[in-house]
Image (cartoon, one colour):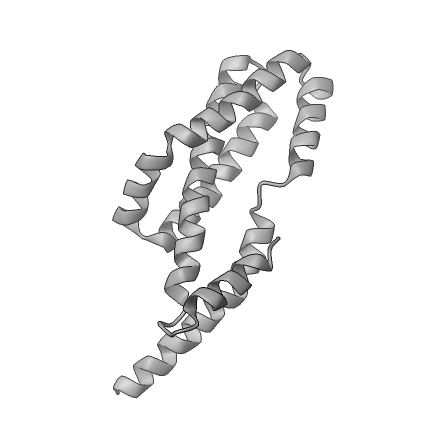
Length: 150
């Protein structure tokens, strides 16, 4: 019975390690997203370039402010649920960018996005670390998998 549980655990760990790179790629904070967001807000929504830069600067501030609260959230609900929460928050922030016309709504969208990426940055590495079995080469395996996304 114990050996069966170990096999199931091993299979789940391998699966998590395989999908880690795919998840990182699909949810990455990509540079081209900022260019598309800038053009969309400027050309379609009519937001001035200075306001877009101001809003984008607040993204970093929001991400910094949410670091400690997100660690508390991750400790309470776990890495898996935290990653799901961050993906949902990212989708909500993109939807808000699409529908918003006023500056305050864009600030709210950026605050949600900052919180989402603060959660994702911490929970993603934690999920990978928990998926690697405890061995002497754990740090090498972690570095190798983490480097695949770069």
